[in-house]
Length: 250
Image (cartoon, rainbow, N blue to C red; front, side, top):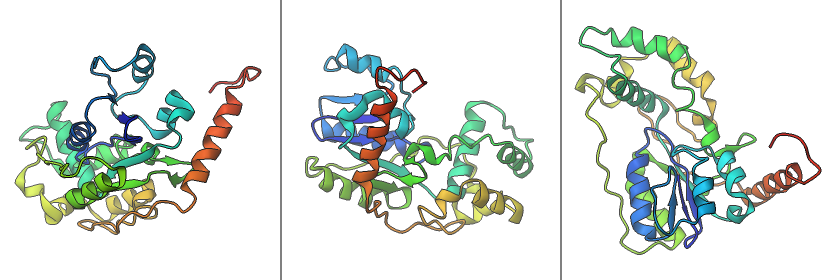
């Protein structure tokens, strides 16, 4: 998660969507004064900033980011990134398999992947809560993994970041066997039942974002027509919840 007061934006870092690459690009473009969670000890961060950043992880949901930083960032533009859900799931499967050492040469990838998907192992990775509130996407920009460079360039222009800022995408891992790369490779891990499961469990990819199926991209993201009003209502409700006479949990 990145916050820039100078350029007035938040980058909500999702998983397996070139998030580390984008976070580095935004930090480089926005220069000094960028806040990052988890915090990295930059001298410009105030003790209050550090206290807030300690409450957030690098993959914080938008609601929690808003609650922690409050109305100060209510007008900041929100940027996030997404990816075809089927490709994202396969990427997560092999990445986590290597990191957690649960895959071996003897693993039946298709059966193991299906069991983990059915068990909900990837539900947080795929959650819409990174960039939604009350079922609506409250981001100004959703950078599509499939159009990484062109979408990043558009965000740079919109935020007024220095001209010439670029994103240099380097694959974080080589964990995925070649057999499971590309649309045909992804298809090897899915049968009709698992495709239906993904569509039912993660409907925002197909409804809100517009992905169609394995190997598909999504249309260029268009922010909600009443984006500012919906954010304002969230902060109004949040202010009411944290009023001195309110004893409820916030």
